[in-house]
Image 1 (cartoon, protein in one colour):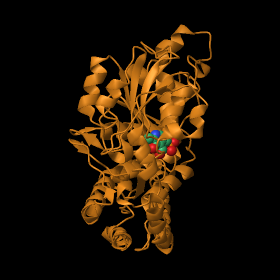
Image 2 (cartoon, helix red, strand yellow):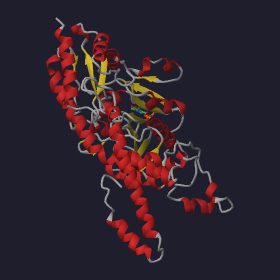
Image 3 (cartoon, helix red, strand yellow):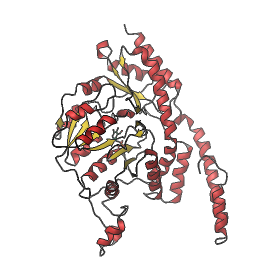
Image 4 (tube, protein in one colour):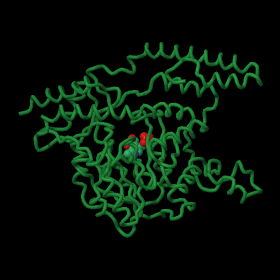
Length: 453
Ligand SMILES: Cc1ncc(COP(=O)(O)O)c(C=O)c1O
């Protein structure tokens, strides 16, 4: 349907061809389309009436804002009206579109980014993989990330070995990763923080040198790239999140991209109960178990992490908008970086990875404690000016109480992660914001630092 509400030519052609066989076909299609046109008009009216829920006042900067509009609502309603709502053709079509966008052979949609991580790690441990990971194997992960980067490793019996962050990019550096490698290391799980790509040249080289798997948790960096190659396509797989506040949304949702046929098959099987249903070699496998009802053949352990056609119908529209939304994020970050440059005595501003294309999930920065500024005071002040703030992702996760619950490996000190934990702040840079919101942020900084000696 999209924005254009004129009767589509393809519909006419199809209807004319089919109307000879089915005399009622053309009138039925026309009536349906007329209803959708009416529905669209109603939606546009309703949406305009509720605009205040979607538009951000000039003096408010929330961490996120809705990026969906009439197109997504219409697509979701069409899916509901079709009655085909569970995982089906819309999910598979969206997976193909996503794979094409990201530049991978396969994409497997799931119900969240956390599920994408758990499923990816579980699939890499499946006996159906050529060289599966084994319980006790070590996996290198960053100290600064979201908990569900690390939890799947623990839940599945692997040992996370935690590495400090770089203070400029907030990512793990190749040198810090290399220092954490032991004879038990089997995989590196990297996380480009808040849209800033990791140094993929260095990381890929050391994974090759040490024969390590590379898994990218790209849940905060959809659309970012390094040297023109999209983040999430450098290793065995890349995971993505479509949570409401992310670069694009299906409200909740996630994806795993991979070029590996075997991994894709295991992901598809484990996503849905260990079934053969979406396996590319379904027929061959089923032939080996001729006395089973082939509709209920289980070849692996599994979960239910399926996404729905309802989510995919929203995702397909969002994916089309994604490049423009990411460009907008970059523009906001550029304005804010310029506007905050005079305050570098007090705050350390973020640095885009060399050769990287940053997609600015948010705008992270560090308060320079040596300047006498207190993070809590700056946060409280920004909040008082309507600017929502939060710490940088999960801070130094090793300090979280849950880390006493499981075995993990320490690699060196967490000096930088502690600085990020204690002095890090980020605020939003999302498509609902305009230059006016950036100016509001910059003037709040002027007001706060104007008071500093
Ligand atoms: C790095 C990282 N990994 C995983 C996730 C989990 O994604 P979800 O919220 O879709 O479960 C997030 C969430 O923001 C994240 O930032």
